[in-house]
Image (cartoon, rainbow, N blue to C red; front, side):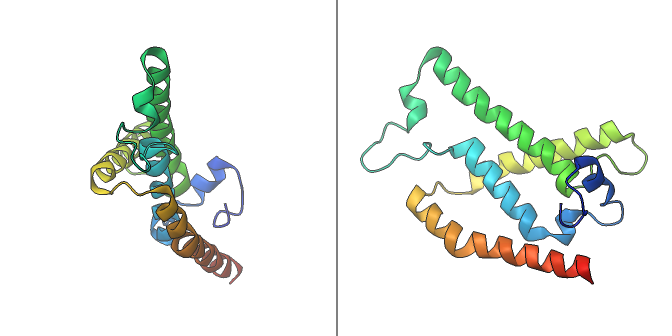
Length: 154
């Protein structure tokens, strides 16, 4: 929103006609993908703590409850991938194809990247993830916002 000067999703996508925000703001894009993967794959109760070897909250649910939990996580994954397109990848702008086709191609690419990251990123305990968030990720996000603000103002 800071780079586009607006909170409207269409104006954010239109502001990326020349250069995508994923290129201009790589730290913000990486943090967005990391948070999308963390919430859709692991969730707040996904990592077993202590001696709980059962697999977290998903192992305690059966039937409809389990279906709703896993379906909700998949829907969150798809929604996160779809929102990454107008926020960081220029929306439906692209050569040769219509806008809706570019949106589908870019959403599929982000979804494939998130699914690939699922197998590559290790499960992290919540206390370690909180420490990483406060020590590394939050200052990185603030620094990225500061750089964007300086670029917009100059």
